[in-house]
Each structure stands twice: as structure tokens, then as C-alpha cells.
Image 1 (cartoon, rainbow, N blue to C red):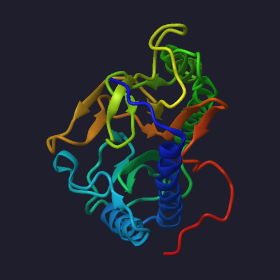
Image 2 (cartoon, rainbow, N blue to C red):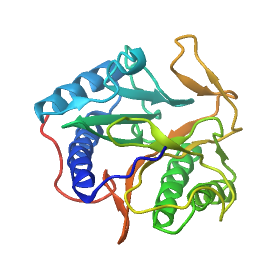
Image 3 (tube, rainbow, N blue to C red):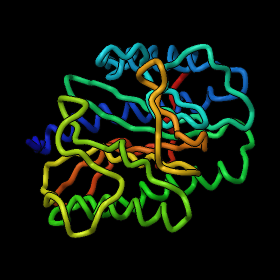
Length: 258
């Protein structure tokens, strides 16, 4: 069942989203060669709690981290730990924030110093695919319109959509209905209605779309070892069209203090 949100509830989710954006800004300033993913995790948790919020991921189904930190060929769900970032890495960072019982969820993939042309293209195209999905999140469209917009953009650039991982509804729970594939047929699926809130999250590889789960039962890698990227917004469907509740793409002075 899809749980629609009132305008007031969407505002509460936007408040959680504002903290999440500041968390991503903080981490962006700390991502550099020699830093461990555990250090990034600690900084994120410290900041989120300082804002009166809690990390949505910590303890979720036993997950030990406050963020997911997934380098290079790891697509998602990386457990923060001793891995030291190296120049030329890419790092996908997924963050969830709970404020007053409402969840916001977003992700970005960051370059670590200068990266390869393949990695640059992967990050650019994956982020663009999220941006082209946003305008589709409006009342009267169908879920397949959102999914297809992502797929069409990615595949036109010769990259691959991960098909076994999906976006999702979000609200009081981090994972609500519906599931949101990143591929599909326009004009199909549920009709989008005012009050629905989605976590839309393209996951893309530079090689084939197949993935594998690591021995830790969390980390998911591209099966062929190709680089992977992940970008995500929480998006509310409103009478005025899509509203991004985690607008990390917007310029401003929303940097968090270290």
C-alpha cells in the first residue's frame, strides 16, 4: 500500500532532507586520499546527531554504519571501515536521516581527486539520469515514465542500469511501497498522485548490469568489476509538480561545520 503524505508531513520530511544535504556537504569536504570510510561515517553520525536527528541506516536490519560508503565497483551498501580512499577512486555515499519520525534518503557519488575519463562519464551520466527523472514525478504520470526516463538516458550513453536494485517509497519508514525500478516502459505502472514521496536512485555500471553480493551479506558489487555510481533524491509529488526534498544539487552556503 502506498502511503500518501499531507503537505505538513512533506514539510517534516523536507526538514530531515535539509540535515541530510548538510551532511553530504560535510562529507564532500572530507573526501580525499588517505581518509578512511570509517572516519567519514563517524563524521556523518556526529553531525546528524548534533542536529537533533538520527542516522536512519544505523542498526537497520543490523547494518552497522550510519552511512553506506561504496568505492569503485561497489554499487551500494558498503559498510564503513578501514578502507583508505586513493586518488582516482570514486565513492558512492548513501545517507538516511530521521527527524521527528520522518525519513529522508539521498546519495551522491564523489570523485577522489582526478579520476579517469570512464569514471567521469559514469558520474555525469548517472547524475543526469536522476535529473531527467525528476520532471516525470508529477501527478497524472505513471511510474513507468520515471523508470523509463532513467533507463533511456543511461543506455543512450552506453552504460548499464542495475536491474536487481530499486528505489522505493519513503516516509515514516525508510522503505515503503512502491518499488521503483530504474528501467521500464512509459505509460505503464501506477498513476502518480499528489502526496506520494519516492526515493528515486539510479544505480549504474560502466560495464554489464549484473551484480553480486559480498561475503558480508551487505556490500553489492558489479559482477564484472566495472565501476559503479549511485545518485538519489527524495522527491515529493505535489500539486505544483515534483519537489526535491534532498536538494544536494542546489548551490548555496549550506555547508556543515566540521
